[in-house]
Image (cartoon, rainbow over all chains, first blue to last red; front, side, top):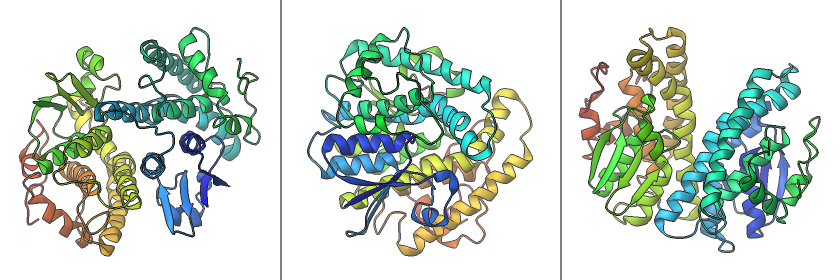
Length: 223
Length: 223
């Protein structure tokens, strides 16, 4: 049985959980707060990051969310999420990297720091300027996803791919933390509404992070 | 014919160039300074980052260094660098992500900012404290690579892999910028000496970035 070390608002763990859900692979969730830097966890992953996916019986330990996703793609045939020619696959991987790096750095990382870490760890109030900057960046990023979805039904082409899972993972955390203004982003909103009704996504949307309440539209499929 | 947009001290471009070299794939180098944010380049890659690899005749444009490496692995059989079982491949990808994210963020990014960008763009002097922190981080990181190389001849196992190319790319830029103290890191130094004599690595080591002189040992195979 797989075990996944994660916490509810980790966008990288969400990407892996969405892929596990789409592929129908069972997995026990283990709560890990990486900001606590537990010695046992650092021994497991020197990078100190979730997700980590383990199978004790088979002595397998996988780290780095993209390495885990590539592993699942290579070992579980069902619902392949890196499809098409080598060029199509490169475009999917480019967009996964885009959401995991650019979208995360511009939007999700500052939101997590201001609205989650400060509340849970340092008890400081959030910096209003940094929140504003993150929300402005979200407008720019959704302009880009609108553009992508103008050209095809899914982020990287005509079929759902790992790029969509990475996008939904990052966007959903930003949305939980109040960072997304859905006005004027009808293309992305339509794509996201479809995504929200997927069985792989429902368990994530119903979870809550202690002490942090999402906006009312967060888990509403018809937001 | 492939064209690679890059600049000499970009560790991500170096990783791709090492892979191209090992696979014997020809490529024309095009100089691009991403900090100039040229409109034509941003149109090409909205992330504004090098490397970008293009083949105009076939209308192929690849972005994100790992997506480019996966593409080369999928399309060029010679000298495969993602070998072994799915678990081995996950370990290679974890280490590539380790060097591209942790090693880069702790060491190479601050060195590039203090010793290259400040010199070329803002003309400020480097911040001595940040340089010291980067060099201290390099000691910790080389302790980890020593540990990896204590267990096997290459970073991820008994054969050379993309993890070694990613490591050599990041370490070589840190070394160019004077960030590596080789004392007390005999395992990593031995591995790196072997790497320096590879035909794929020689062209990189002979290149210079204008206005920035590397330490004397930088391109010496017997440093």
